[in-house]
Length: 353
Image (cartoon, rainbow, N blue to C red; front, side, top):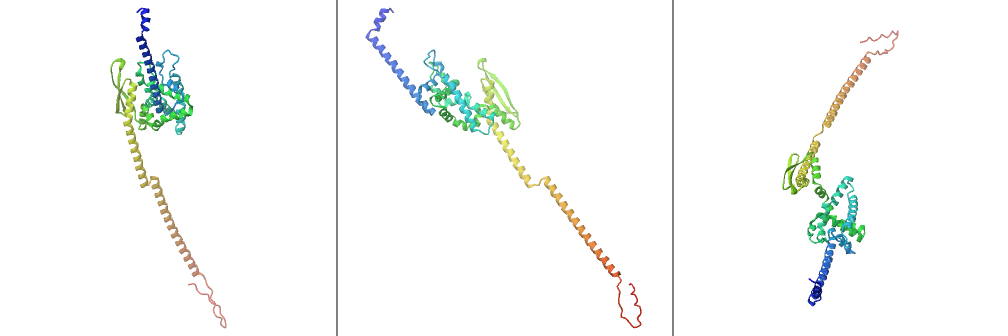
């Protein structure tokens, strides 16, 4: 089209009117978009249980790096993600340290890892519907299903809350999101490391855990591995995943549910057996007690015999002494005085009988 014709056409009333209408429609769409974003941010703040003083910070926390492009005016959430990660680590470390005073350093580290690792943060982000409000580049709606995008946005939102308020407010808000998860902490630890949990459970019964690759299928770029897990030679579960490691974890998680029942039943039987043995020991005297009783009885018998012999000896000695005294009395010579007569004569001695 020639320049003159183009200029002439642009100044036609109908064209000018249409251009004006298009510009007006564009402004209307822009206002609607702003209103929509504003309403979306209000909904998200209700979910977060925190009201931002400056919603621009929240807007930045939701901006995916891909939507920035070459513009320097628009900021992505990467810097806030960096800040939020540090705030989250501090909050969880402080809470775990104070709440679980009976645990050692190793156990506390495991708990912190579980509560701050990617998959756990992704679940929390989805619970809060954060991915729904992400600001994405055109044609990239699939990123709302991305685990890494959800995790990054979650940490960025924590950083935004810290900047908009202070550390204590951020801590209180984050722990509000974590409250239910902390109550189910033992199950969470097992779920996040099912292979380790299964190994610990098997060690209680002295059994060995083994993983066997049953097969693999599919093209090289999309392999599927099938794995089974056996404990003590008994098959408990099998699973299929895109990697051997993932298949083992999935099988261990399924096996743990069944094997935990076996461990609990075994512990219950052992407790019942110990109770029965305790009752039996109470009803029957022990070997030491029986030996002691027999020894005491024998000692008492010997003592009685000795007392009896001693009594007989004393009686015999008394009788012997009495007899000797009597004999001596009989043998004693007694002097008898006779009446004197005239022409007294000698008194004859009494013969010994």
